[in-house]
Amino acid sequence: MIAPPAKVSTTGLPFVLILSALMAFTSLSTDIYLPAMPMMAAELQGNVELTITGFLVGFAIAQLIWGPISDHLGRRIPLFIGMALFMIGSAGCALATDITHIVFWRVFQALGACTGPMLARAMIRDLFSRTRAAQMLSTLVVVMAIAPIAGPLIGGQLIRFSTWHSIFWLLAVIGGLMFISLWWLPETLGEEKRVKASVAGAFRNYGALLRNRKFMQFTLILTCYYVAAYAFITGSPFVYIRYFGVDPAHYGWLFALNIVGLMGMSVVNRRLVSHHPLETLLRYASAVAALAAVVMAICVWFSLGGIVAIVALVFVFFSMNGILAATSTAAALDAVPGHAGAASALIGSLQYGSGIISSLLLATMSDGTPWTMAWIIASFTVASWLLAQRRLPRV
Image (cartoon, rainbow, N blue to C red; front, side, top):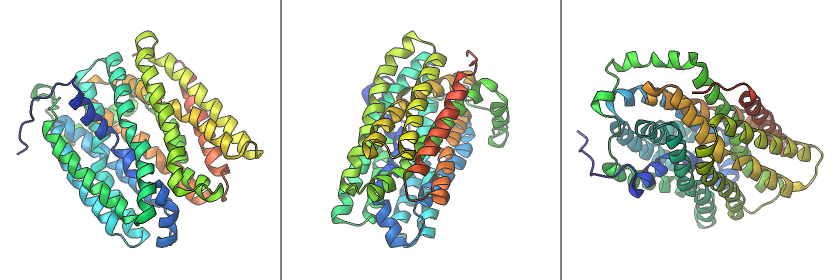
């Protein structure tokens, strides 16, 4: 039995910090070893992009399982199980000796990691209304952004005096610390609000969610954007380090620059959602992101501006995530208030599973230049913008 939590205010700093850390698990699990990817590719003699693909496959599938379970059992029990699985998967990655083994353990690692962001979103929906949920999600993004800033910097420094294996041992330790912190996390889904049907029956909710036009439109806006975002996350180590010759220890600073932009826009978004409809914010943010992505692709095609142009335009593109993620998620969850766990799982499955598309495209179509990364970012950001320009249903 899981012991009852200590009393923690759902508006206090400890609650926000724990949820922010849970939200950060996805980015931390991948971003921290980005500087080591060229080293891993050389040592393991394989396509190291598949480690990201494997993680995202496990992440996408597992969320669909955990969502209905959390609607039936509550949020805390799945979180405890998830953190235990994450620790085991991280240790497996650290001990891996070839690409096949590390891809397998990355999938296993994702089975646990996915519970963090998925259930953090669900807990926000359990507690707050539409606008307030968007504000809270923006707050979590600001705090959780420490992970993608610190991750590549820590990883880059670790490989200066150790091997890439130490990065995954560090993740196992972080998973243990998160497991301990869950004892202070309150249960946000009371017995009276839980789905009374069997867990198997709860899986049928996905059919209803997929048929819900309001929910799916907001979800697909974010999904397309994240295909583009993962194209940068997966492709940038090779573009910056191999193509432009950036020192792996310095790669983290270039990556962190984008997270600073994301944090800034998340702070701005907290004010914007109080004065503007979420649909309007989505239209403008997706338009700015699409413009930056298209201009970047043009610069890469015509060899204009070099790495400076890519860094500057990706900064603008990535900053819009501070608006897009919070507003689209809040609007989507508000469209289906009775099934926050399953809805959050489907959002996360499509959002992070979308990275499978970009990582596979990069693994199979890369030509050794920044062009593949650039056209993937541009194409899917434009798709996100086109979805947002359609008459969005008010929810």
